[in-house]
Image (cartoon, rainbow, N blue to C red; front, side, top):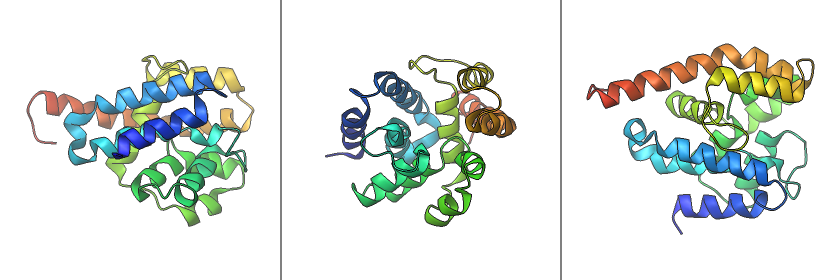
Length: 188
């Protein structure tokens, strides 16, 4: 089974029934990843797989620490033998090290999972932070506001996402610039 087909099937099996909104979000993030093919080249399938799998750590059947990037990455590595780059992207999606720090898990996350190539990290940040919880398109500003509002500004997630906002905006800008250059026929 191809990497992306396997990733979609696995994500669906873990999210569709217990967390249908999270599944819709994951599908939207994957669709966004597919739209970045012009700048991803050979990494396009890898990114789409990571995108559809990025939130599997929320699944009640695999959540152990309550920190979904770490739970998802461990499951993919230990139970599924998934591609190492996909595992690293899931582990570090959307500035996860900052949230890990808030949770006292930074050393654990960083020690187990090296950070993936910056252009791939940027792409997954862009995909996640331009997709609504229901899978629609949004802006990074609106997405960040939604997250703070949903969790509250003084929660772990609220604090982390506010700290991560500058990097999220910078990553989105880098991806948008690369896409504009690709569409204009300029080198990446």
